Amino acid sequence: MDPSWHRDTLGGAVTSPEPCMVTTEDSDVSISRPVAPFIDNDARTIHFVTVSESAKIYALKEYHKIALSFADTGKMVLAAVAGTGVINRNRALVHKLWGPYCDLFFGSGPDDADVAAIAVKPAQAEYRDHDKGKVSTNVGMPRACFREGGPVLGTNAKLDQD
Image 1: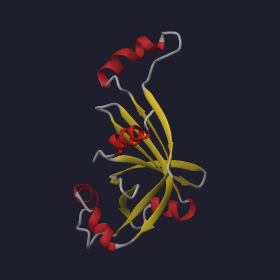
Image 2: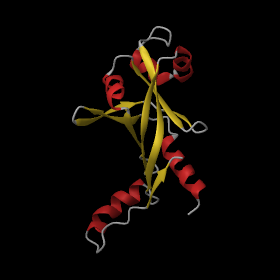
Image 3: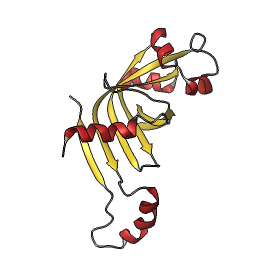
Image 4: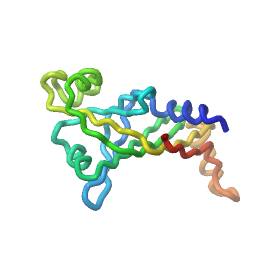
């Protein structure tokens, strides 16, 4: 399979302006929270803005590992990205990333909000493309569960970021 197809498909799930879930480690438990991702395909980095003293910041200071989960439910494309999170308190970067989600969640402008940016450097990614679409998947899933070999869920691939 052509490697550029993998990147384009993964990018198709990760370029959506919709929120995604970010997962961090907190002592002995993993916890997921919604964030608004900002994708930089050229730099192969995913940023998001969070409160300066949030639980995500504290978790990253100790564990550095982070995972993001994306879902385009209309196209039935799912993606997961795991890597390292880096805290950045640069106000110019916060200005660059600031958008409608930031206005909604933080209530003030980028100059007044007590926020930091987190950069996610992917180490690996995985996606699943349910090429049948949402309606076909919902209709076919119950029937497929009773078929020998189980359901056919579409294309799945794991990607290592170099």
